[in-house]
Image (cartoon, rainbow, N blue to C red; front, top):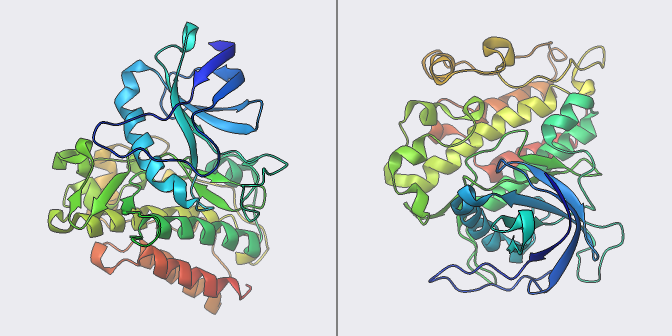
Length: 354
């Protein structure tokens, strides 16, 4: 259903017992006039809209998804003051004030305009014209420089989420828990921005601070099946160290995304022609794998993505890159790289050329 000329109440959503936060980008107490908005029926649906002040990215939640809205708002409000360029930034949160939008909840997310307001950092990307990572990789092969830019920016964003910050602006460790190629946006310069924090968890030591994750079974089975780590699929997370367990699970998902990025890099192949894009395990399990099929492949048989077309033979660079991917998706979660280490490796590899 399409609606036009509605007012959105963008006053900050308040959560009982939590301190209200002020956003750095602009006054979230203002009323933004929405010229066009499409009301979606699923939480993951989004739509670009145009406002009087700037282009923004609005994510709508119908009434049955109110708790999911509150959860994602809570995560994004922790991240907004830090304005990391590889993490989508929350501008405001609110609800519809009448008509078909009444009782719908909205998250207003950054979507940088062509002309930056004075308070925007100059190094920020302007917008996401290339859509999701999956959409971009489906339609574009890349050269080595572009592939490295995507991989490093994605890994840098995850490293930021996994980092505890206590000075200046506080930020706890956050596990994303649903890294996949639909939840990563690609900017105009082919950098990646992590989005969709509906399943994310705030971590402090061994404890989670999310009401929705107190039940261990909810922690085990979270995310997109195809990208779930072996321990998540099998239900054997280390509950004694939840922070390590969930960040290690993120690293497995990151490894799969890096594979998707680099198999589309022309420079890694002898004929400089990358094969068509494919989701991880598409060849092995098809488009809709079941939990049992993934358990058999990933957990029992320790299956991992393979080359659909061989990379250039005996090059030190391709061998080092493949080793990095393997170290991200290692069957032993304790042996996986941290996001910071993976970013460092990729940065060093980026200076070379196939």
